[in-house]
Length: 549
Image 1 (cartoon, rainbow, N blue to C red):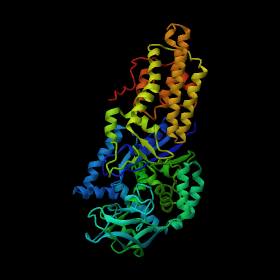
Image 2: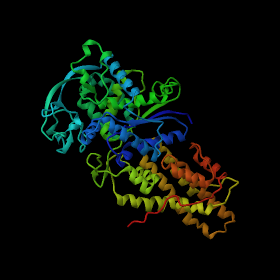
Image 3: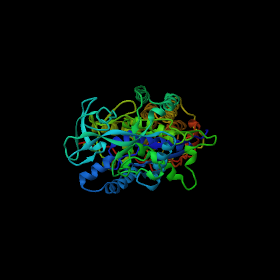
């Protein structure tokens, strides 16, 4: 196999509360599965993310609790790190935007964009709370969305229809601090000149969109068709990255610049670059991922929920290109839509959540990883219900998948095979499902990957039911052949589940008495070789059945 160099860039969560399973489904689990898979097939992977410390949700939470934004960051960032460790999320680096390194990279990009003529000064309308005598960040203002009529839409984006909103596109806006009406006032800011960058973005989308999900293509194209406008990249804030005014020419220094900060939409995406630099700064190991200068193909994959789409498919490549025309631009966007809870959108701020830590403690990490991946909202919104989770756990994960593995391992216990089994046609069909599962993983089609795993297990169960090995003499050649064939499919599944359920994959390898370092392209030959090394022992159920009340 020819190695590929891959950056797996996972969206940065706000550190303003606990993470719910909508975050896992939206981007975290798909990104981790993809990173694990690419390492497992021999690619060079850099997997980065971090906590978004400067979004206004943090200051909203701090105001609500009468504390400082820094205190909120200090509370929730370690909790997120611990949660991701619980779920086995295999980041090469998980950092945060509140670092000196990130500040430097953001300010460097801001200055470079100014020098290259992509930053301008202009006035914009921003909501102003007269009772508090202050401009308000976007998330401090709520009202009625002009597009869908949703009550409680934020002034920058509607959680209901997902539309990005501009100042004035909110009916009956009120301050979340005082619940009093707010007004729009002019204030001077820096703007990213997206119209100037539009020809480059058209070419960028044209070149890359063929592999994007259809709905991602359509939404991105819709933004381009409507026409991009200059977008403010600063706000009147106290919490955020300062503008490096001393590095700007006199004509680009605006009044009151000391009271303004870099806007979070501009700052957070730069985290993918700053995290890469933080990870590999000592020996410049980050540079081949962003400035490839060899024959190794390099690709960037960005994982996020759909509310972040335009910031990544258009605004981020514009920032990168404006910063340095030679830097590697994004390639693929495995963006997911929303996972809902019983028909309602997950929302930390509104308390509509299933806590990620609680569900892992109650049911185990791998069952949660398995189920969520099976219902990922890749093409449309999906729905989590406890009834469906319990059904999947008992009927599919245990009844089909775990049942096949446990049956075969029990029947194969203490047996060895000195010669490679002659693989039966039906077992080869199961292996073919696993080969197809690998193709789905390469294409970031995670639901289809899980479906192929379950199909392989179903084929295995049918094979065992048809062959009825319990009726055969354990010492007979026929028994050896049947169990050897079934064990081939178990080994194949043990390989294919490594990216999905790593703890279970480790247990499977221990029961098989083998260590599997890589998923080889010729899976059938790899399986046959592993079976001759296997010695099954210590068999125990992989999952514990739920006793529903």
